[in-house]
Image 1 (cartoon, rainbow, N blue to C red):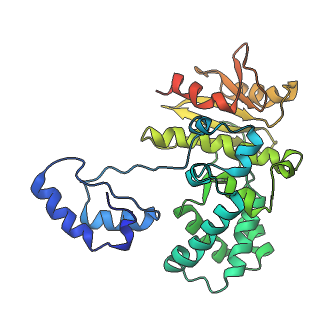
Image 2 (cartoon, rainbow, N blue to C red; image 1 turned 180 degrees about the vertical axis):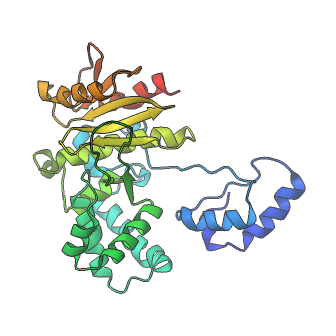
Length: 319
């Protein structure tokens, strides 16, 4: 096992010789926290000799081992293993992580002259998690150019800080939104950047719904990546305001998913799904609502589950 292989790229040419001579699978496991750099080196030295896996932090199911008390606690702490294995306060873990990311990794990847501006940019991104990406607004609010904002977003994507959920396109007579939605690969980092200091601060905060949505969307992403599959995730929104938070795509069969942070099911939860079904009546997997309550319900062709059951449901339709 060779950890952080990007720090010793010269080893890859030697590995190529060994792999070619041995002609065996799984001789080496290479890890890298900067996939874009590893991909470049791999394409030069180990093309056709590798299998690439994207490993994100814990899933919700994996956190059950640690007896987390509430969903708000999960949102606040996030999913990084060391927080649970070593019982490290999130403020310390994410503070150290972000400082290391900027000081050690980021400066080697892009020429950022003003680190305080970059920190402000990332913090503004965190405050807009679950919202449409608006580069112009982010640039204006940070005090940087549009091209710089685009470059920084690309760097944050490549280093697995932010995830951009692409909009859904299909031939329908509606004008669809073209901008992606912004999420963080780990919701705990978003919480830390937003300045939450304890779990109680999240409970009634206006951002809670977006943070809950962030957690659920990335849970679907982890499920796909853990199977070695492409994400195949989208959201739907048209110019009339009709929206579906998440569309899970299995071989062009769609599962529309609404994500709600409330603990009580209301009729409003079903409105978006009803409109979506008018556009796409053929939904073999039905429709899904994820909410923060405790019970599972089946209502005609709509299943209602808590986020704790999400991966279990996905396994039943996408094994």
